[in-house]
Length: 207
Image (cartoon, rainbow, N blue to C red; front, side, top):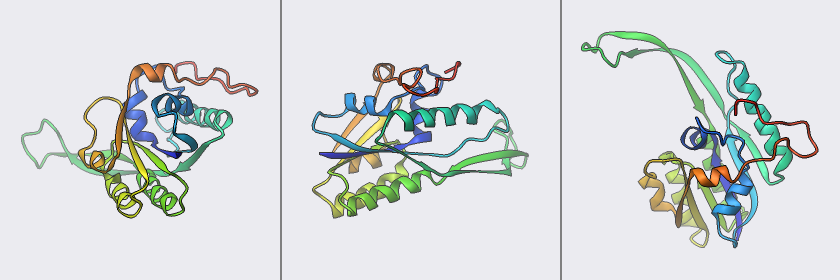
C-alpha cells in the first residue's frame, strides 16, 4: 500500500518527546517499525512552525538543526510550516476568588499546522496519492478531514498513531481503520545517526 504519513509536529513533540532523550528521532525508522510490511512509505509530511528565540535563542538553532538532519537523511520527508502568533491578553488568575481579578499575559499560539495537515490529507486523497494515510496526532480538529476522506474514498485506509500517553481522541478513533500508540521503547530504537552521514550536522549536546 502506498502510504503517506502526516505528522502534527507540535502535538507530537509535546506529547511524545519533550523531556525525553529521544528528540533526535528518525521518523522513517520509527514508522518502518510501527507499520506493517505492506506499507510502502512514499512521503512523510511534517507540519510545524519555526519557534521564536526571544526567551531562549538556542531553541530555533536546535529546531533548525533537527529539520536539516531530517531533510539530509530521509529523502521521503517534506516540511510544511505554519506560524506563531504572539499577543497580550488579559486572563483571570487561577487562584483568584474573584473573577474580576485579571492580569495581562503574553499568549503564544501555533497557527496553521492542523489546517495544513487537513488540507494535504484531503487533497492527496482526491489526487489518489496514497492507499493508506497515517495521521500522527491527537488533535480532534482533524476528525472532519478524516471523515471526508472515509466518506468519499472508502477504499482508502486511514491509520491513527497516538503520540505519547493518555487516551486517543474518540473523534479521531471513529474515523480510523486502525490505531497504534508510540511508546518509549520504539522511540529509543529509532534515533538518527550522530553525526548525519556525509554532513557536519550533529545532535545538539543537551538533546
